[in-house]
Image (cartoon, rainbow, N blue to C red):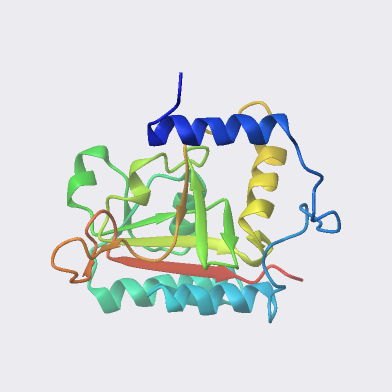
Length: 214
């Protein structure tokens, strides 16, 4: 029976190609090497510049004392009553710095600014990797108008692949059920090609990076 339809012709070509395999003409290509060029600067600097390109705000902190001071200044500038925090480590830090926070579930829907930690900062894209393995759970990454991330310089990696390898090493058998890569504030241009910030998540993203290199 003669094959006439376009679908049948395509399938025949696929079958013929599988039967008559040709030798690989690209023998010298290293398929395991990175497809990206090496970073042009230190990974922390690249992360900061990429984050700013994506409309995020980068705040460098020399130490945790500077982190506390800058968080207090931001709250005053934005006229926020307090921060919303679920993570116990961040709660203890804010308590020691005498920075007011809220953690009651009943107050969640009225929050303006939420603070979380993160898993990694990805320099190549200026992205933040978060997961449900952190104490902040799933909602605090997407619900508040302003998302503040507390991170350390030691958490900066060059590529997403480096972050995923780190996640496997960290969690082993108990891998988080949810991971999210955040690149800048939430945005969309679906309606009349007009860019709208905060459409599907926070309209502001702050990354406070503490220098722990020493």
